Amino acid sequence: MTSLFGEDKRRPHDDLVASGSGAAQLSAAAVENDFVERVYEKLASVYDFAFGPALHAGRRRAVEQMAPQPGDRILEVGVGTGISLGLYPPECRVIGIDLSAPMLDKARRRLSAQREPNVSLLQMDAAELKFADGTFDVVYAPYLISVVSEPATVAREMRRVCRPGGRIIFLNHFRSKNAIASRIERLISPLTVHVGFKADLDLETLLAQANLTPVSIEKVNVPRIWSLVTCVRD
Image (tube, rainbow, N blue to C red; front, side):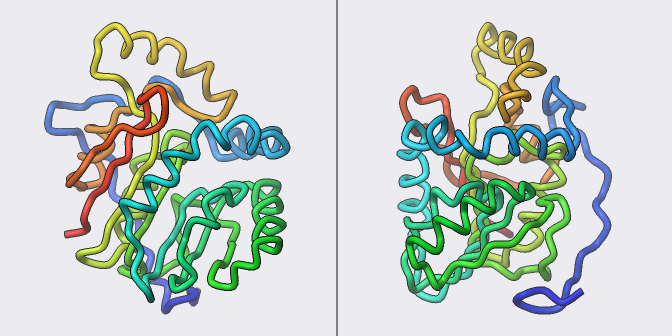
């Protein structure tokens, strides 16, 4: 299949590997794509109200940290209702993907209202990106990686389609390093998936399984329980 930027060079995913500290578990919660689709079909009508202003400071900080340059090719993985689209400078080429058709419908309406000619929207599974290796300068996942059924597979796909020297950026909540908070997050994670996220995704294990090393980790939003994680594709 031909992608927007070149020939599709997808390759089979490797099996998950253990992190350096052993076979750590990414999350206590397990979900499938059809479950995620159903959850976000229900959330589409209220997403902007529930997750918009409260989490927008993190989105703004992510684009500031990204510092897009004219001509940069940016992939936003999990574009949702398109809340971030107005933050990108018009000199960039942005592609936003999402699995949820209802969320994309809202994003398309927003895109039309904002008149952003530099942005394209596609329905796509983040675990099987239809782009050639090294296509993008920046691959960014805002509030997405704890939603998907296979976080490590998605992170590896993000790495694959990022060019060498490009950046892979995650904006997300990850499991606390505090023992008590971590245990609570483990307990509630099978419940929080019903409102769209795993509460206990482990960052170190995710990065190890995706062969990524962070160059910066910054706490964002209020309260500061969300992290902006930037990695550089080697």
